[in-house]
Length: 315
Image 1 (cartoon, rainbow, N blue to C red):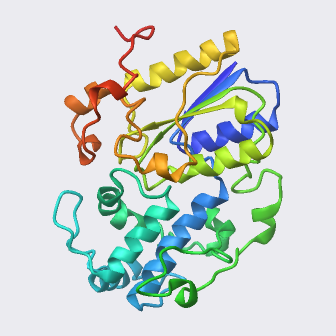
Image 2: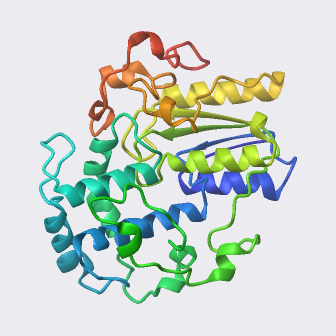
């Protein structure tokens, strides 16, 4: 039996491969929250760092957070007129926020500036709690920035000025049981091929880095093959990219031959202009569907893509 899923389904897959060892032959998590609590730490980071840089104290978020507070923050940082394809209008402090977000989501990489402009408003919405809920009532109960070091730390030494927030529910954060946000230890019991959008800043590419480090730390790196797709949107894969990954996963299980993969832990590799091209479908860039974000990144050199090879069912 195989597992495949997207977004939070990727989190479920990663935990299921550990919860039921040997039950699943292989797994294909896509755009997955493989870093478990690290995802909610990042959502918290965005609010607190933006507030610190703008000189606005608004945590916990008041009821008018989105209508009154966020506009003040965006105005102070020069984010209110920033668009993915427009001029760079951010101020020094806005640029510092952008750089911190880039580092927290995977490091300098192609398309990172456009991704920040694309996701900046959405990320603020994640800081507003639903009416009638408290911080301890949902997944954010496990979030914390205690001990987090933000880079860069200029022109504002944000590590000194940012508010530090402990987890509202420490037991839920650290227990290995099936809590609100179950931990992923990095002990897959079978082959895992993952797909992730390079510039997705909702469930960011850094989730793959967290998972890769955990898997390697348990000596199971040979069970993981990660692939990066050059998109900004969340779970924005085309049929060929998914079919190729699925075909390669099944072949891996059948033959024991680990498929090709991207390196996700080397900053120099990630910062290269053609990073993510290897498994990105060039046809999806040449003829993108409506709403696609692929052209927020420059085109890949033709020779770098491998996803155009024939796979079963791809024509």
